[in-house]
Length: 490
Image (cartoon, rainbow, N blue to C red; front, side, top):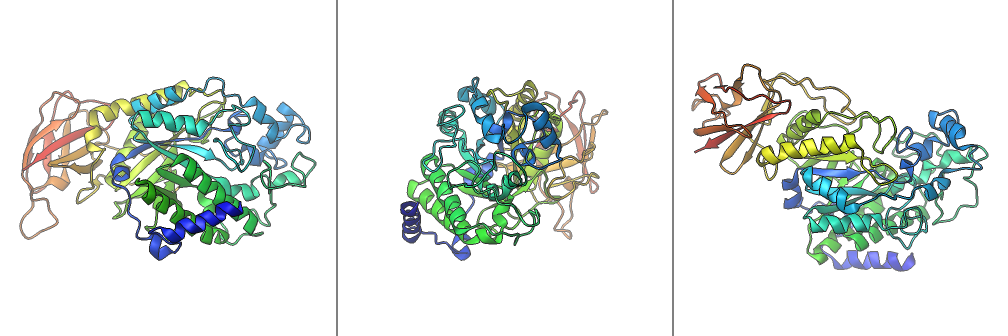
């Protein structure tokens, strides 16, 4: 531990980035990331064995009176006899095929993939020298993250990783409230260490007590830097609790170390954070299960899941339709964002048929319409239409009833793309943002449109353009998914 901490300081001292916000704000978002637009998140771990409630099962099973607590006693018995650690031998991952996963993600059109390296439960999905509680030594007895990264590299998919480790400070804390297997003494490296009982359980309190100790935060820093060094993720994703006051100096050290190592290796990397954990534009802002209502001048990301109720596999997952997810992707990209879409495999390593089909449907749409998404840039307006997108996190459960008047714009080279989020039965559309402007109104579009085509269809649109809108009529264009009109500009 001490040697690694010394190494971290040496790398920071020698590299272009220092552990100050001013230095870290010199960071620039990688071009590959801005162009990628669509990635896959993977929540898979020991919590996939009980497959009940959500990936928060390891916390909630120790909260007396919770559905997970009652389910655990009914199904597995008393916590002192069968605790969370006893799921590890059951996590065999006997059907885990990293090549098959990578093939599926490639077919889905994903340009980058972010597997969970360590979730709140403290079980590492990779080979580590810092704890024996990892997938290489226990459970599957395979370097899950390493095997996936190898397959991603073969297919030109950018490798990433996520760390939810910091929440482990309190995650198992309620196991100390009653006679369970979460018992003292707990030492660094144990699965349950430290299992601290928070005073108020208010995770939004940036000053919640007891503060994470120096020992815990140094362990967090070294774990993160070991992950960086051994797997070289191009995207490093963090969950919300890194915003806690106690984490700030360690965040700066981690970021400086990561950016300096990336510069040393000659690769472009990114950190994802939520809320205001990082100084603005020192990393990439991520919005959980939500998006922005308007275009932003900075690059950002939405992370959401195919399942509405859980990030991990459960036996009662509620799957979102592929059409809704494609609409979200189009909306997000038009507003200068990208979408990281989560899938939760089963404990045996298989991906459900529902998840698989949804991913394949998204990929089929992208194969036809990808030129409006990949490598695209925002236009002078993100779009138009009556349907308002609710801004902020945890809003993906609100159904968006898009109409044929809801249009999103992107540009790519000499082409402007107008994506209609719902097709009109009569094939009639108005693009108000493409109305003929006059010289006195500089906000109007003055460009010359040479030609219009519909991606994926042979139909030739008929169109006129006046001061109200570009009015278009096309026959035989019907789809359950958004339809892209491609405007060639002169």
